[in-house]
Length: 305
Length: 305
Image 1 (cartoon, rainbow over the protein chains, first blue to last red):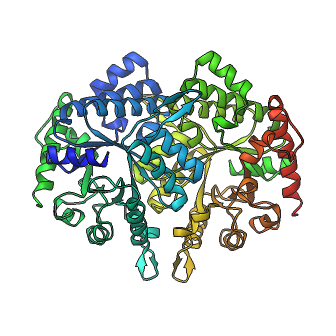
Image 2 (cartoon, helix red, strand yellow; image 1 turned 60 degrees about the horizontal axis):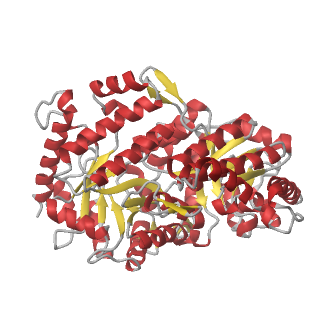
Image 3 (cartoon, rainbow over the protein chains, first blue to last red; image 1 turned 60 degrees about the vertical axis):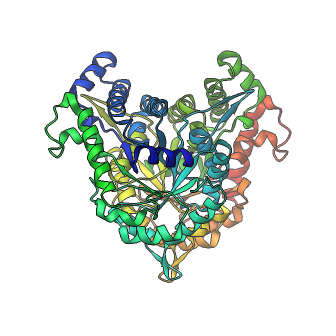
């Protein structure tokens, strides 16, 4: 899947990923009205609304982008129906040829980490039958529990040729509380980065490893250091746009070949119709606004090369 | 809920929690046969099997114990039907008067952490209606993203009077890779422990905080230090039994009042029928074996006081 991700990026000339992180408040009224008319103001109604919202955005942008990153928390908050909408979104995006990065930030140990891996990027055995429960191409993984937590994901991914992105340095203001603490003369995130590089050597694609890293756009000087520590690692970069990261700051995350990083934008794309930046779009045309925002973002990111 | 947890522990005189972490291989054949006969060898069949397995164990032990800790990964691996079995298990345990600790180890930032909190220990708004999607009493939270990741959980928990257990020092062999790294002359887990103490002061029950900590049974000397750093924090202790933690090692996790800690056992209880320790139980009597194992565990833990 890392090869497919690289291929999709080359094909679209767009090192960007659209974050499908729908809040109900993002969904235009004509969509929620229709969903509630059919399912009532229920969890099923909310799930239908976010699914229809997503579908509109995917239909309007899939030809421009290599990948999407649905954030499972936004679906999980609507319970089982919400998670069914997550699955529907994953499946639909894959049908459209997109690489799907499940932003699930799971992490546990041993057989428990295996179970998460099986559920999201693996296969589960039931009697004599095999099933693929959620079927993302990549998932994000939290490294706080160490190798015991990450290795089971890699083992499952080796079988299915799927991959992970390990949280190294996150984009949020308080990420430094633990991640920046100095250990043996260097910050903890560098030590995690070294481990990602090591884990990745064990599961390589053609040019890049199946073990990627998450490094926030909001810390470009750290991005530069981590790029050097993890030369074969694809870096998933959140924090562009709404969180304050600028295109000019993103150069250090890329390798000389213009590859090695993929930049996420969520609100900036899926809520584009609420902003003036891309022209005045009516609610009904929210998906066109998302397309305009994607086009703008691709141009903006590519301006750094 | 921290008050109810303390009350349940006093009532049962059992500072133990049963980890409901079912693997299909744990489920006796007579249960899977029945489930597959009804639903086929499908995800629904697997989910039915683990739900029936859980129900048997809960029915056989609920009067002895204060709390259960279902591990969501074990359900998530069976996709949507598995997660529905998780919800059914949570609801059933609550009906039986048990405190339910959802072992979900979630952690993200801002509105995303809020969404997880809303889904598991909060309420979600859909139009004019409000729903409680998963309804655990506590959830486990990963602190790697710092205060931005933890605070949204606490905010939601304040409204619902529910709580969290923050991963501080986990029970697995490689937990030290990052958690033990020395920062300003002390290991990272102590710094996380200090933050847990600080976060907890903001959300106190009668005697203990709603912000608990996870500290593995396998590191008793660290348990002692963390007990002192977090005097008002309930400590959830995994790693007893199958992972090698012994009762004699657990004293440092408790306060003078015999409270302040709750010890988890998963495989040791739910797979008791596969062991010789509690007598020879036939598969049909797996739940009786679990009851015997719980009785043994309570006696074992209480022997340290």
